[in-house]
Image (cartoon, rainbow, N blue to C red; front, top):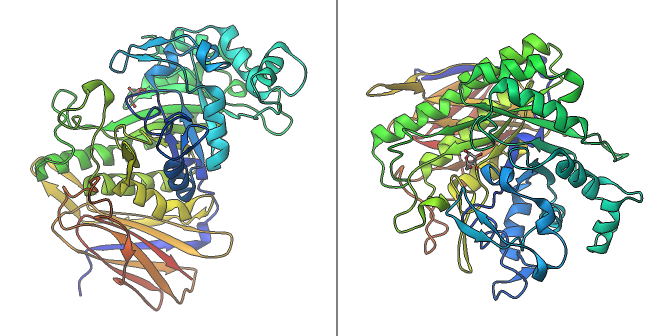
Length: 495
Ligand code: AHR
């Protein structure tokens, strides 16, 4: 049969590691992400350990979350970490001005977050307050969590119940400094960054700090240019980038009740990540040809209208097959750019935007996006196998995007993983991929799809969408042939 998409996997050129940190998540004090999502407090009737929901912790362990970003987002530049340590009853409250104007009681703080990371096996990624904080405050935070010797901050940590330092490696120096983080110009922020980064000390003997500059808003290339130009290379380990797949900020549309035209527009925004990563990387290459500095896409995902009847400031949205396809193709983009994209954070983990988990009281559901992240975790720290691919287009109205996206890797045990997505909601794609320089004998796989793009896992139908065995792939000599159903995400395992 005539093939729709053809490609070649270049095994001989496999050199670059897909950093597991590409599979990171994001937890902001926003809506019910922290309170109700991760944390219910130790007096709750919902099963918990020191206030952390047991069901959520188990689900996140299975996901293999490599790193988790906290406490924001916009919230980070209003957050004063010292309010969130010590005796809970004495902690001051603050108003969460960005998200719903609710009162934040600071009952979930640094110790809770870092304990959570230890429980799920994730590296913490702390976002420092540059917008309304001080150099001293951030410098103290680094000392509080990382210093094992005798100092005012390490003493205070011990008094608050933690003897051993946590060794937090990943630090954001502010968030969206061009917007909610202080409305700064790139030039002004670059100077602020230099000042803050100077006082973020390396206390740990195990690892050096990985400092991430607050990055560009989507296509703002000037921002990246200025950061790379004005911040000395030795002070910078990562530059961030934020891009949301939003159709129109004034008319985002329903998360579930969308048309195919809206679906196609979301896919165009998702595919834009390819262009963004390519363009921002090219600027970084100019200043950093050895690719020492990582591009950190620390906010990405679909953004729609909130669910009817919920607080508009809480950004609670359902999650459908549209989100699964969006996640699959975005992760393929990151994998294929693993030379520069070495860290990313899906926004956000629980109950906010493109969440992997939704909770409602004691109920919890795993979203289609959860399943994609779980299926794809085979790529974590595996070696990228470069691919050349010719895909047909999916065209709807004014939106044209490649229908098929693929990435592939080989792990330490020699197992090959190939992840594929088909954006087209109507057409099955016949794909033929040449395995160049490798002979493989067996293929198996899993697929995530559903009858309708709008299908989701509701609190009363939590297993409606989940991965099942996929039999649509076969090996014919050096060719891998795949029959990829409409609007589906497939991960194959070959050996
Ligand atoms: O993820 C929600 C918000 O989106 C974050 O707080 C902010 O950084 C971005 O604008």
